[in-house]
Image (tube, rainbow, N blue to C red):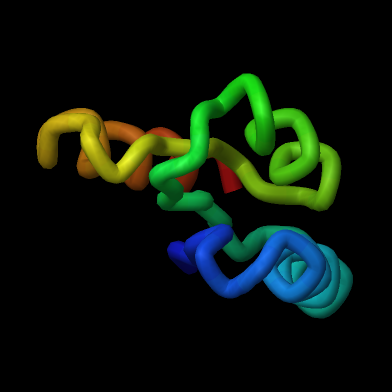
Length: 72
């Protein structure tokens, strides 16, 4: 599952929490334009597996998805 904090922090973090409660194994990656220093900790605390920036290369995004999937 890939989600974006653009939904609004409360909605996005709430979605992550609900997904994690419903299925602890589902991989969740947050894709965001917001700097990790601002939101990464909150996203991981809500249950996301990882956090990737929109401006990162497609390779970084794909690697992050693969890692999240392998850890779930």
